[in-house]
Length: 439
Ligand code: SF4
Image 1: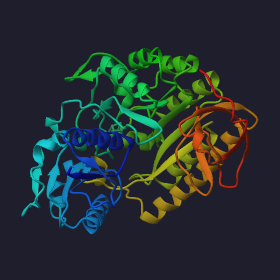
Image 2: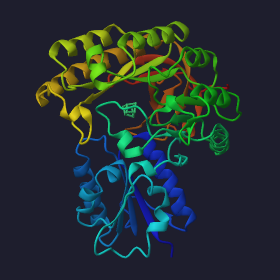
Image 3: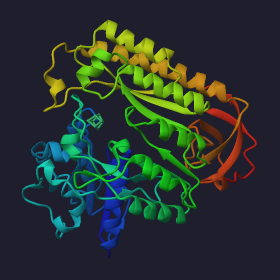
Image 4: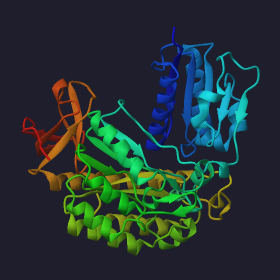
């Protein structure tokens, strides 16, 4: 009988696509993939270092896995495994911890799946993670997250990602096109391009060979893919030419997610971000000019060391005046081995949460205002497989979340719909979803 493997992923879209890639390796090695509660022989837990309380979360998942399958072999991979292998090895029941350079060779490291007397750790210094390992999530979501870039050479003072994932490196354009075609052939309608610093695409073996814009142009002409979404791009890398190109493209959807992190130039400097807020405002205004219905999402961190009340108000007012569509708000949290952790001007936890609450309300206001501008318009929506209380959801090209009564025939289908009004729960209600949308 085939051995059974189950997966658990914490963190970002990149981790989800990497878990899928590891899953395919297990499948090729003859394993059967089962759900987490299905008494697996081995559990792979893909961890995140950005999540708060990463250690507690990891511990909890291990305990849950052993509850469902007391003799299961437990393997921990991912960013947290690279940064804190020793801490993880002390969690009872963990058999193996693999770092960033080792995680994609997991099959070589696991043996007969007998529980280990002592946790084995394989964790090279992060400089060893130089190879680009492609991955994409497949068959587990309506949209596919296609990883095209990994690592980061920026040194933002709050961030552990360069320590956990290493330096910037990318797939080749040729490989990405090949994979995108494979994904399209499987019936997936939307590809989300992902990377740690996606806009920095194009570095291989430490040398810049091409640019993200080259990849965008190459992907735009391949057949079989209805939609391509850019997951997130740094404002200094979102060039005029990319915005102009997306404005003309039928494939690249009108949605940009652009990390701002702070609307105070003082704090941006302390964060060592590579732009000032004026540049950010210029990006937003060019997008609005060329793509009026574009959805624009923003990442912001509150409570960074040195952020006074006035600095925060500065950020709040800046965001309030910007024509953006939603915010992702993060409470600053100290990370070991980052310059920010040692900076003066620590903001008390209660103030961090107050600021976060204010920005969450602002985000809701912005989102509703954006949805309001869409009422009465028609757009194509890709419906997802969820089914909750008789309803299903989908996303328009410009990332408006719609809901409609569940119909299994709509799953993974594109339909042209008309936006009617905003429901009490904030989702968009629609009509006319019967017509098949053709690109
Ligand atoms: S750009 Fe900054 S925040 Fe983003 S991954 Fe790189 S170092 Fe971290």
